[in-house]
Length: 482
Ligand code: TRP
Image (cartoon, rainbow, N blue to C red; front, side):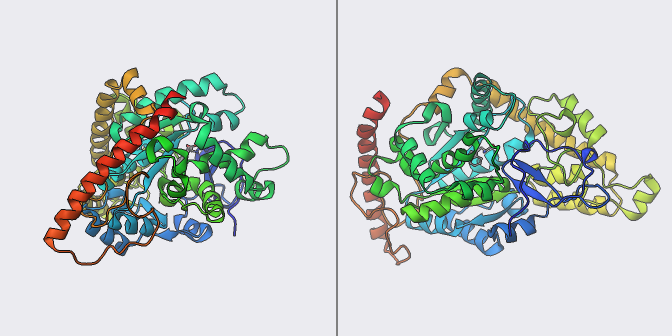
């Protein structure tokens, strides 16, 4: 069953006071809002319902255990706490990681303003961690075209400007330049990428685009087509400077896309088409949204200052906003609170700590203390303020160091360097030109190997990697010159 869609609404959802009409929960790329009951109050997003409606899978402890076993990394707190809660075919990416077969990370941002808030940084923080844990290439798409097409006011020049400043913000998250390619749609369109855009668009009918995104007869045709652009980035063959030019091989390299759940419709569509044109289907990891200061059921909005903590906010602004606006799960009087305790399920300060406080034990202590009434709202807010101040300050320090040269470094078309799974016993080239099986072909990865065999394979892997690197450098020249 489809979720209600409202493609014409902008993704800056209103705060609860502004809501009055009864309506169903609605989550799609252009509209995110919880169910509104008869009383006109918006409820929190029901993520469990989304998993069922979208047909995705819940991330369960077994999957996380397997991740930890394969990578030797403790799952990120977003995974441990169900903030990244759902997936499509993440297990297939782990299979490939286990066998030493290539895949890449893909995420993106629509550059709609210069005001980046903490909510925007969540998928990027997570992606950075994945890039380190899996040691793989990453492409970051800046959809300047999308933000122009979907806005009545913004000009092309305006979104191009945001693109550049947003790239700086993204870089400040801490991505590795050797493994990361950032591009703007306006700049990168053409060549291999455009060929994939068109291959995709040929397989999407107007009816499908309407059904998936809720478009109607008055929708501009750019919007109707845009899904094929966001989708085509999930194909490795769109990036010959990274993966090589042999499409018989690169078409089989899948993307792993960490994104907020509202982006799923784009990739559902891309997966359908991929299956039909014999490309690798992208895998997905879905995250929840960070609620606005006003509480569950609302989403931080870049255009509503009091709804969000911005990455530009000063320590004092952070303090004042949390103290003034953060919805509290505490009781009205100190006496009542001491007696009955606070409600951590709706308390925004606690909710933010779930996102940003790394230490599980400390978080659990805080939860128990607040629920027992020992900790007052003011105390909880103080802890939250400190944590956010630290997070924002560290970001600002990194951001101050990102100059134009660094932006170019990330946005230049160039080969990337990555090492993959250090323990993978099977050698698979990252680009064509090196010997070995094509990506996607069966490889027996779990046979027991002797120490000597492992050593040999490791050596072979290094030789292959060097060869691949050389081949890559050769291939990239015509592209770079174009
Ligand atoms: N459409 C997204 C936005 O408006 C940007 C985007 C493009 C994206 N590709 C993506 C987000 C892949 C997540 C993953 O912000």
